[in-house]
Length: 139
Image 1 (cartoon, rainbow, N blue to C red):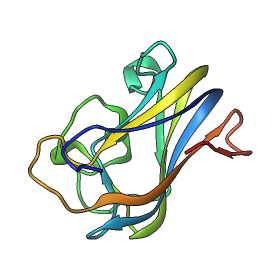
Image 2 (spheres, rainbow, N blue to C red):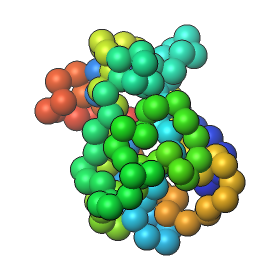
Image 3 (cartoon, one colour):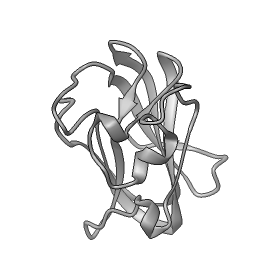
């Protein structure tokens, strides 16, 4: 995994509405993600807020306007528009799609602006759900 690059996590196509990146551990502090992208089987990013995607997270580092949950899917890359969790382990970031769809890839980065290399999710999995209650681990 590279902090400044899009990190692709590909799995068998699945019909889902909720996509969650569970972060068990990160390198150098609380995990940080500048954009969380969810790709359909035909290559469309379904996550952006302007396409109806709704971002949520287990927590958010308080006191920093540049680090907000809404930055997970706002289409802006770089540290100055990222999400940072409040804790250092067992955190998650999630996108609820506008409607259920077949997805096969999750892409995330820490800082595509290339300035920061810390806080990169190091141990994680991807889970999918149709209802936001029952989850299937796919990566």
